[in-house]
Image 1: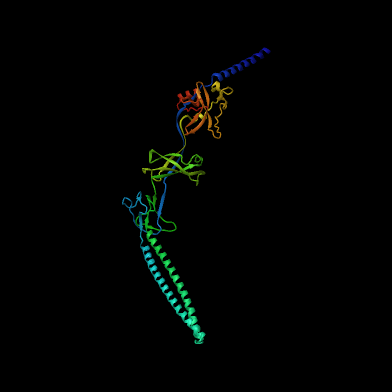
Image 2: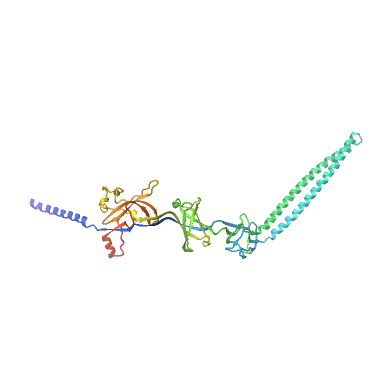
Length: 443
């Protein structure tokens, strides 16, 4: 009976040992072989940039309006002797347009006549004042004789009182005449002010250019009526100088901190796709705007336009150059993100626990840290392909253009193979058999 029981137990034990041995053998020999996706460490130039779009604007624009209402009669002539139009060059003080001044000329004639009338009234008041002063002198002499006769009892009291009253009335008449002269002079001043106003209105009927420049926009035609109200109607838009332009660029709040005045800028325009233009940052405006919960700042970019190729209001595709690296070692950004998932992939002398200095950085399998101390660059790890293994190199991270990053580090040289990811042999074979199956790197 015991022999019968021992035989099944022994068979089960042998089966378990065989299964364990098979699992162990598969663990050692059945795993798919790994191959690495690599890229060479190259040396070259790299520029870290911020991309944005903006609008080309003239540096200084003058909006010329009308201060009077009326019908546009005619346009002036530009420097070429042609009628004012889009793109015409005008000199300072040049005639842009003329408004019908018939109404204002009539007002001017009325104002001139009124001034003449006021001057005549002023002369009349002055003559009347002189007459009152003469009567005052006569009344004063009679009053003086009356005092002497009345003292000698040679004049009746009634006559005495009459001469005294005449003297007082004469003095009052002089004061009234003097006030009339002052009033007449004030009326003359008012009349002259009205005359000057009427003359100014007539002058305003001739629209002149306040600056030398180029007409960007002409907003009226001959025969249109200009109506002046609280705001002066705009007739012409003049750019003072098209040899110097500005680009008003909208920059995201996340990038505006890296934009500094004087920084170099390159930009292109859709109108000239094969030409690159240069500029520099002027200033960052503080009046930010919000669009869909995103804060945007307007950055002024100054650029020269000596050949007048750039036209106002073109759209510019702008690149702010925030950092430049020349003759630097460049690695793809993916090389700084990858790390081996297993310690067995690391070269034996660089595995954790060895005396290799580079192995002290971080445990394999974890994302490489990017630490930044005050006054120092960020650091990271680049894994180099070393035969069947990979070897880490601690590097300092410089500028990046979104695809490549400039790095420096001991043990990193041009031409070395930096690991970007890994694939298995079975995955590669599957890819060869079926081109529609994507290869996913093991992370």
